[in-house]
Length: 295
Image 1 (cartoon, rainbow, N blue to C red):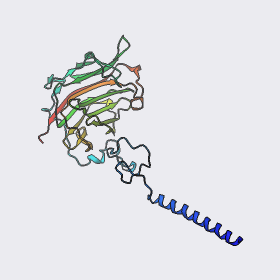
Image 2 (image 1 turned 90 degrees about the horizontal axis):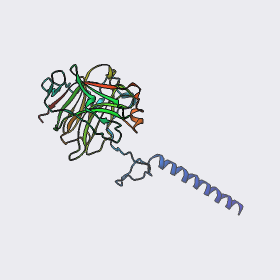
Image 3 (image 1 turned 30 degrees about the horizontal axis):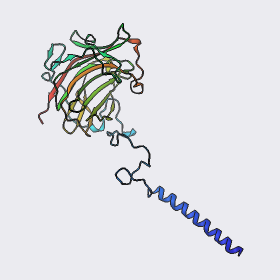
Image 4 (image 1 turned 90 degrees about the vertical axis):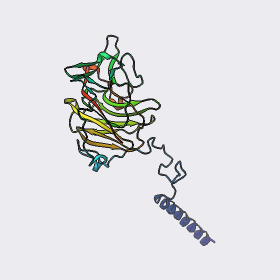
């Protein structure tokens, strides 16, 4: 009787060990995956799903380009620079074919901690000087220069020297909110002007940021920055060289052309806290260009 009990205990122990072994093996092989939102096998394990489930491609650390080298998505693409004819806004010659004008008297609110002032968009010595200042009313003032008309697929570019200051942005971008929010960005974060951020929004959905390492400090001289907006992609350029290409969910609605300089609030993780000790801070622009695509 004692022998039978011992045998039973041994059998139970062996069975328990076998179950543990089989379960561990099955998990390691992925047999017990939780279904994703489509009812298919997924890898999220019940955790919060990435709000941007299809992020733009980013190279592996060992494949990341050196400063100044293009992202793998843009390798081999042809050069593109603005022609003299495409420079629809030229501060040296006074050309303003697109009717650019300075915003004045209102704020975008939200993360924009300034009021637009035409007094902060000053043309002098053939340059547009766009500044952030602090008024006697203790409020900050920024600058924005924009078109009334909208522009569709084509090459958008500017020759500029961004401002260097924590907590602020110098930019060229296209934008519309009619009928939906579409936008394509070239943004310099004053916290580090050796890099430029590319981004875009389609029907209000962004999350396409790419920070390109220029290999030089943009605040120390003028360079050409642009993007070629096509139906199926956007290609960004620095000094005529293609450096990044996006192909997912591309904007489709005609947009205004804008440049602005502004300081942020509530976005310290992105811009760093605004450093007002060096005010005024100024970004400078030589010209802005647009060349329509024929296809």
